[in-house]
Amino acid sequence: MSKKKEVQIGVLAVQGDVLEHVNMMNEVLEKKGIKSKTILVRKPEQIEQLDGLIIPGGESTVMSRLVSEMRFDNKLVNTIREKVKNGMAILGTCAGTIMLSKTSKDHVVKDFSQVILELMDIDVIRNKYGRQQVSFELPITIEGFGKQPFPGVFIRAPVITSVGKNVDILARNSEEIFAAKQGKLLAATFHPELTDDMRFHEYFLNLILS
Ligand code: GLN
Picture 1 (cartoon, rainbow, N blue to C red):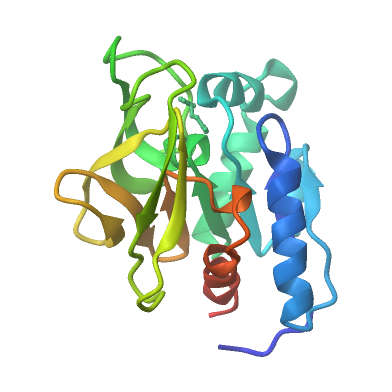
Picture 2 (picture 1 turned 60 degrees about the vertical axis):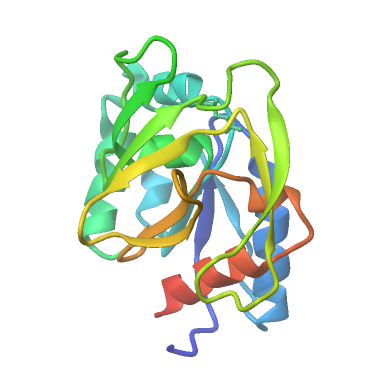
């Protein structure tokens, strides 16, 4: 891991639980002695300066609509895709995982049209546990996090149903995949930013710096 003292991380701030990610990431940066602060990303130009982007949880259909708005002329989506080719890392949580996926289906209406980034070779089903306020907590074991389980907070969560061969599964049960990694792309169907456990964000920072 290179010892970089500056690292620019941004949270896509069009919709969702943006500030929780900003706060947790800033805490992690501070703990590592890195001076940089996490920025709110709302414009395509801001993507250019990033080493890492977080796509938060929220409502992916709304997020899709906002990132593909006419005023961006596809620039936001295209810039993110281009930057990933040049090594930018992305962490997607919950709706962010849907945005990262190659294919996304809805649990009830199955096929529906939604702009997604199609960057990660994962297939996702939205609202797998129901579409109302279904939320639950589940301690999960994450690869590389040691014995202590991670508090999985699931809110109208998707599931990852299958992954390509270049994707590492980081957390799963017998039927469902909760977290996965492909190169510098990291996806979780739960919300690490809504817990006191900073290990997932630390993992993301290490991925950026690797
Ligand atoms: N159900 C939401 C969606 O489909 C995701 C929920 C969340 O991010 N907590 O986008």
